[in-house]
Amino acid sequence: MRSYTHIVGSILFTLVILYILNIPATAFYIFLAGATAVIPDLIDYIFMEKHKRETHNIWIFLVLVGLCIVNHVFIVIAAAYFSHLVLDLLTYHGVRLLYPVKQTKFVCMREKNRIKTGTNKEKALFSFLCILMVCGILMSYQVFSIIDTTAASQTGTSNNTNATNQSAAKTNINVQLQVDSDTVNKNMTIKTGQNESKIEITGA
Amino acid sequence: MISDKIYSCVRDNKSVLVYKEDVHKFLPDLSNRWTTVYVQHPVPPKQKLIDICTRLGIENKDRLRRKTIEELKELLEAKTKNKKVVIMFNHFEKMTQLGAETWGFLNSLDSIIIVASYYKSFKSVAYELYRQFEHIREETHEEIDIKYSIFAILSALCIFLYMKIATANMGLMAFTVLATIWFGLLIFRTFIYIGRG
Image (cartoon, rainbow over all chains, first blue to last red; front, top):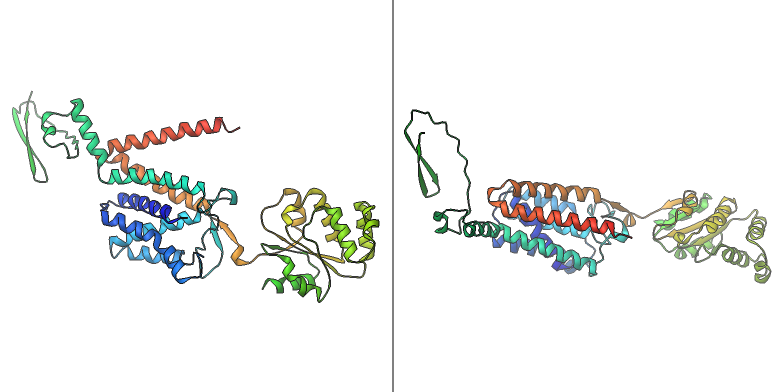
């Protein structure tokens, strides 16, 4: 795979992993994922005679997974490296995942279905990943929520108090209270961060 | 080493099929020890039988051309008795029905050992012949298809992602977008299925 496909694939994969693990996707993490995606190939080109994918093996991945306990940064690196392995597995030549223990090539799918580097098939995959990556970045920066809130306030479903703070995410809280018939008034306070809302409940 | 494996197989009167190797490079080693004939491809079978007979000096090429495949087979059987002849060719994957029958007959002869190679998958008609060979495959040429493992990992990730988005309060829009994409692709896939002819 070409480096641009690896970069896009690893950013997308990292965003997914970070989202599942509840880790905020910062710009640094996105940059790190993109950079890590090309490092295995770079090392291959610098230290080996040609691109034989000797740095693409499961042992390095296992070390990176082990290092994830130390710091969140390694989660990003491991995710980016894993995406690199997966994308290279889709190629015609496959990857020697158990190198240097075994020389056996690991591939994905039959020969005719595999992706040859630089072909239209790869470009199609790149475009598809690109769309997903853009969606992922927009989602990780809560752009959809902002659009959602804005749309809601424009259609009048949200009350006037929302209009003062449109960038905040809409939060729905369902509270079930058992109110005695003889109770006349009851006060309830809801604290969210620094905000405090007071609700007065009136008995029937 | 592959050459050693081939050598030992030929010594034990076993026909060999090698994966992704040009058998021509083993010709000097084998021809030092046995009568060896190299024909590039296994087809067309009649032409190949004529080539083998000519190189073994059995008869004149023009006279051989007039004979049928069955006559050529009989001739070859008769003339190679009490001899050990090694026949080599590449591209086993080009084997046809008639070719498989002819080479199968040659392989059944005690006097003839076949050393062949293949580079990709071959027709089902050649499978019976394929089973009669000893297979030599270098570790570097071995391939393991792990598509199901990869698909399972990616699917599991997608399931987690979808669950996370769907259950998040802030993700109403994202949930809608994802469901829309999913639905759109489902429709697109259906159209592809309908118009596959």
